[in-house]
Length: 73
Image 1 (cartoon, rainbow, N blue to C red):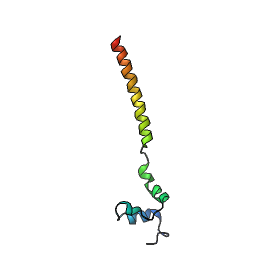
Image 2: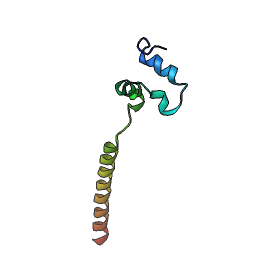
Image 3: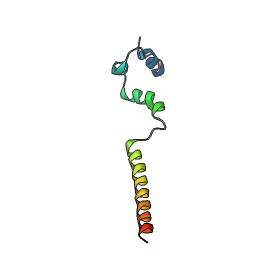
Image 4: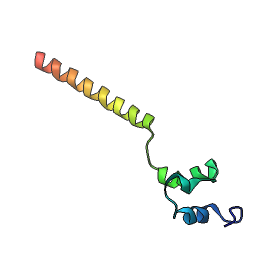
């Protein structure tokens, strides 16, 4: 198989017979990232998850403070 003449999507499907990291051997990082991009679409990064959880934590803390004030009154 001549990699220069084979489009990336066909090359990946042909290499699908190999398992694990060997499947990506010899394929430039940019092509790997482009091939994996559709699978990553819609996923949140760890930073986004952390920000969302931090916001939820702040909201819950505010609710706790409010409830504590109601109970004390």
